[in-house]
Image (cartoon, rainbow, N blue to C red; front, side, top):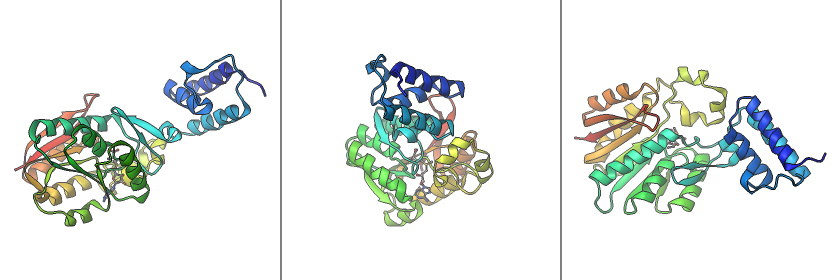
Length: 282
Ligand SMILES: C[S@@+](CC[C@H](N)C(=O)[O-])C[C@H]1O[C@@H](n2cnc3c(N)ncnc32)[C@H](O)[C@@H]1O
């Protein structure tokens, strides 16, 4: 079947927009299909058969709810592009705010040489990589338990921030391998979807790893354990920076207060939602 690129693009667009998907989906699928973005395309050329078949296949995949980020295989985070696949959580805009917040705190309170930062539950490595790229002197460790995620983490580190130290471990085992009072900052976006909420999540989220989303409890498990167990690993005046789920900031703040942290603060993300909780080790 012969088809002009113009008609192929229109077909992808009409199908996806009618089904409620976005222009970003359309453009990304067209880009993979033709190897070009729409601005570099000669729409009067004929599309070849492979393009037509790929377009059909990817459009159907997207229509089934499969995330566009996994179709692309990479996704932007701040000013860089991370490799992603089904083994890692798709980096979210609110996590960009978490990384920005951590960087701002380091610049304000910890601008001395060789500061020690750990990113617990690192996934694609987005937070650790952002910090390392911005604070060149920092020693940043990224801890991740999933082997599949760790493979992506190490590839992203190699490409984007080779100084980050990747560690394949359960964060609560890793805890036993480091000295007390050695960390200037702990930053973490842990799994925080409760068991109850997990089954009700929209279909698209079930393509992401369960271990990245669900804490298999009430949603606060990781905050409780990290807050309590890692406190002695933080230096005095060291910071803890958590990404938290919707409506969780008060609960996470209370956990930190009970554990003896001070200067507990909730910070809003770029959408003005209270998604970041910070505290200082007393
Ligand atoms: C919510 S995702 C966050 C990923 C990444 N930091 C981000 O913001 O996109 C949580 C990550 O923690 C990892 N994880 C879950 N439990 C863990 C544990 N006990 N120790 C280390 N990593 C863990 C998961 O595999 C997943 O990659």
